[in-house]
Length: 189
Image (cartoon, one colour):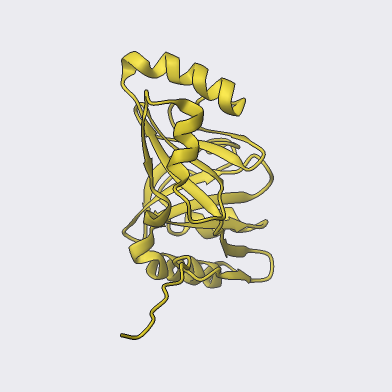
């Protein structure tokens, strides 16, 4: 029997391209863990998150970040936690160790492609394919929301640092999602 070895790789194999002022880059090396709780346990979870991560758990269409750790509100009493995680060990175990057994914790890392788009014209690029109002006045730093882009489900989060957005979409359609971004960049620039 032949020896076979599987090698993990990100959905876009580390794609990174600068289009002359707008950069699109996959961000491998980050885990995504879903955290959900009941309304009755939400206050306790907020205390645990503050103690473990030094962050206030965001509500509504918001996110909260400290360093490279980000909590993104994804639904009522549900969040995505994004943090650096380079090894293949179960990242949900890290979160469970910090937050205990009260919330429901599920590793979602392999289900999503994670892309950052940045640059002075990044908002213009996204406005062509995203139905949300991404103006600075409406979609302020730290804002997040579920949407669709070119008929593909996505979560978008505006960074607190300059013109940068984190985009999350299904890893199974990562190439189609990237293609939509590339076409939009070429139409804008």
